Length: 107
Image 1 (cartoon, rainbow, N blue to C red):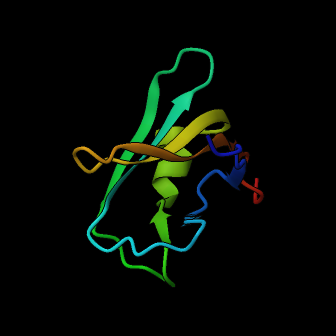
Image 2 (image 1 turned 60 degrees about the vertical axis):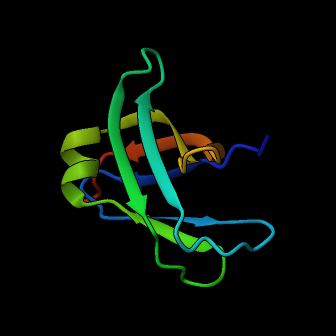
């Protein structure tokens, strides 16, 4: 199993969650699912699927999040997240860790 990779952003920021395969692997045609859950209850705050992602370089892609997703749908707090490959018969957890949303800086 991979090591946790903790990430964070500010509420109402529109970050890109970058994912890089190690070793670099052609991910053309793969389907990924990002899930962000409340730590204590495991309630899903966000689930996003990425079909046939565009590789930035071989084995690298990104999950774009909108400002409304980080500010309204998810909200300020610390969450668990994971990214899975979800192609039938090839399901595998690729990345996991803590996803922190901080109070936006302009307040």
